[in-house]
Length: 165
Image (tube, rainbow, N blue to C red):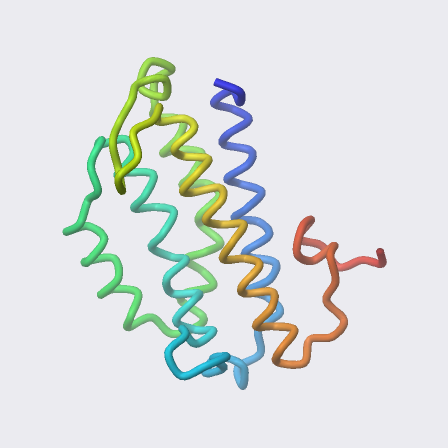
C-alpha cells in the first residue's frame, strides 16, 4: 500500500474533522437550500454523509455492497434533524479509526469487486471513501458559499479551520 493503515485512518479522520468544521458553518435557514430542484438540499447532503463513509467502509471489508445496510442507514438518516446529523458526523473520526483498524494488512491488500471496479481494498477505500469525502465536502463548501458564507476560504475547505490565506 502507498499508505499505511495508520495513514489511511488519519486521512479519514481529517476528512471527518473538516466535515464537522463545515457542518458548524451551517445556519438553520440554510438547511433547505438546494442549487436546483433536483439536487439535494443542504440537510439532505449532510444526511447522506452520515451514511456514505460508514457503509462503504463496511462494504469494502465485506467484499460486497451492503445494500440492506445502506437502505436502513438512509431510512434512519432521512428522519434525522440537523442537530442529530451534526452529532452523528462528529462521531465519524472515532468510527473510522475502529473500522479501518479492524482490517488486517492482508485484507487491505486483498482484492474485491465493487461498483464495477476490481482492486485492492486499501486503494478502494481511498478511491470511494476518502475521495468521496473530498468531493462532498467541496459540494457542502459551495452550498455554504452560495448561502452567503463569504468569509469561508480555502483554509476552511482543505484544512478545516478558520484562517486567513
